[in-house]
Length: 419
Image 1 (cartoon, helix red, strand yellow):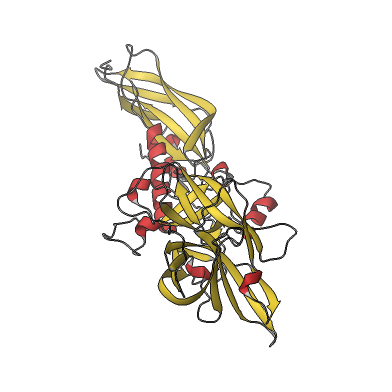
Image 2: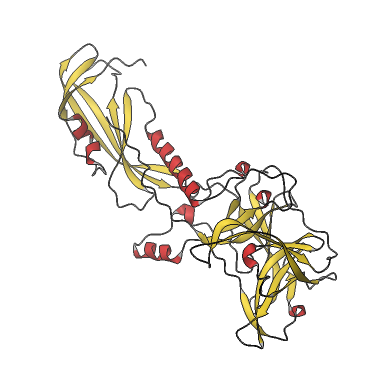
């Protein structure tokens, strides 16, 4: 029998992250003290504020104003995303909460550090690489800064992003501090990484971000260190959603989570005493790992069983990739009882789909059994004349059909089973 690699044709639809920064227009007499930022939680870290860049607009008396979230990492330095950086073309400000006595407005005077790779195909999307920028303020802010996570990986199951949100019904520069509570979970199709590997990009689940949340610090449970910086919400492109709608199907369960992407700050070399060796997260690496998980699951269908050797073959199917239909064909290798007048060849058709975290799942759709009539017996073998049941499906590769491989009459080694 010739076994087949059933995981060779996998295709994944990858989510993308928008690089769009919310912006508004104002007259050229606009001043940063018009920004309103209040606490929308029971308690808000005072180090978290908004980063505003104001630059020339379409007319001489107009400003274009862009905003992101940012946070203090030193008395006079802030961190936000690299895709929020408009320092070369606009005047920047960091503004802390305006509802606290120590509120501060500080002009941005320099770019200290930046780790950002633009998306080469689409500037409106992020590239999937680290996305961090550090800016110098004109003077210190009298608030103790937040501490960036450093050193070896830490295990955690949640990340909470503290964000600057727009306020419904208010103008574009009236905001409130809120939070996004996210789950950290391995997803074999989207995030097949363990935290111990130090993936440079983290995917967090069951939470969503809005425009303007970019640059927010993300904290794990039981720690005040900033583990990650939020880059944006991840989503399937509209073209993929439209295609699925036209085909009358929904998202796969593992794709249906609201999802956030963030940079793992243990993998950013600012500031760091000892650089970590981090795993670079790429779509190619994700597909390679997912294919390996699927192949391992298919190989599991071939697990040894007394009296049989199982072979798995791929069937033609209308299922959307990576789902598929497979045949599990059981070839007898020994006799549990003394050889009688016939030998059975069981077959199963199984459907492979995936749970909420992209673990492969198998469902038996059909059972078929063919029988070989014994025409001659030897000490440890028999000759068979086969009565093949109809093929349980159309084989992706017709030569894999056991009926083709074995024919209608053949000899088979059939020694007594050891147990």
